[in-house]
Image (cartoon, rainbow, N blue to C red; front, side, top):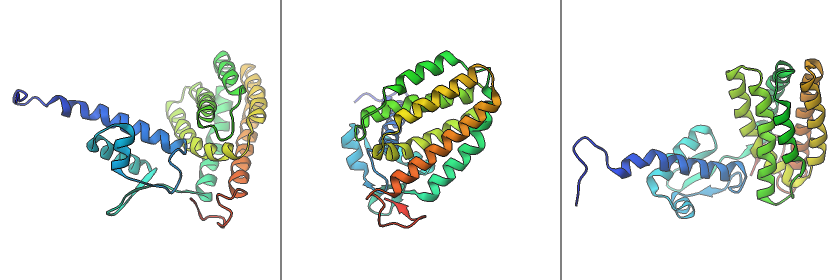
Length: 240
């Protein structure tokens, strides 16, 4: 057996960060897209087999996801994907209402309207409710659209905060859009917002952004709370 030179880590050890990043991104994608549903139990063994990765990178990925609040450990059993509560929904949308309308105002006249139109074209094709791939493609363009506006403010901290919220939103929208197709309404809202941003109308951009977020909040709450998914739960209870 050939040993690495003293003081030099083996190839397996050097590859560990790359493998754990790969495991993290794959498992996180499954959680965000609800391929791993809220409340479902998961195990290292199952994830290793599914993603063809070793236990060490999967374990490191799960530790990161636990820090993100997306999973939590169950002693002697494995992990459970974090549930979504009605309070979670309200909290995320409250933060969006604080940050994104202000970002839209700041971005008016600065944003790359051509890029927004390109993202709008991707989103305009809509998605098929229940089809994970088309929903994921639609929501990725939706996220990039709003992140582009936030980045146009030139405020890196604001843009990072908005992008984190959009990540949180994606999981909620996967649930809400899977129960109701709102893609055409969202397309109309985007086009009006693009026009306001392109002409530098901060007041209108801020107002439209606020209206869009409130409409999305109503859609998510209505779709989730009226579905059999949570029919037996009261407000504030876990959505499993």
